[in-house]
Image 1 (cartoon, rainbow over the protein chains, first blue to last red):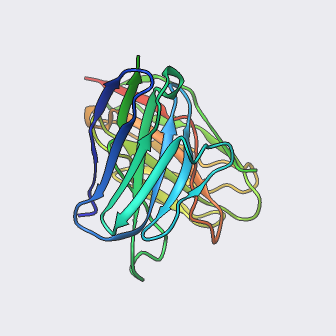
Image 2: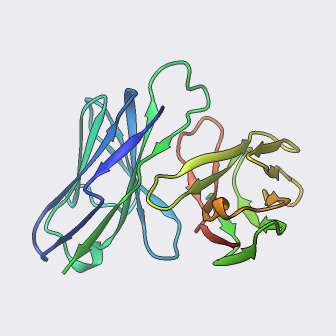
Length: 119
Length: 112
């Protein structure tokens, strides 16, 4: 149980285009999902916290107009990289925190990641 | 602010060797500490955790002890297997906060 999927697993796009990445919790509901970014040989950096039915909370230094997050249902959050540029090339990872009292440790379950390459 | 420093990889060991991956942290308050593992093509999975000083987390033969005096949470396994080949991430979370702070990850390869 507690499986999180991401789609696509990799994407190549031209500079200036927008790319949407989906994060789905397959067998549980998640009020909260998280989006991370990972550069080569660096740690996962939290970009934003996505809450179902409300606006996402962005970390300092992350442009909310550049990285649009939509959490329209309890099983789906999307990250759209708008007007992508080569410096946006990275590995994007989502995680989902199951709703409910059973998750007393606030455990997060991670997706396999999406590799974005902007040409 | 919070930070996690872990041993740089890659680490290559022979099967049945002893494994240590070092992890030290800087945090305000009393964080919970975690080790996550990422197998090829899969998402990060929680391997083990410890929530207070001197706690030992263990799972699948791996162990890590929360050492407050040295601010460390080193991962150990007595006899590694080929199936342990993966990337290992050390992480922390402050009490009452759901945000995780990760180390850079250590790629481990076990050769038969």
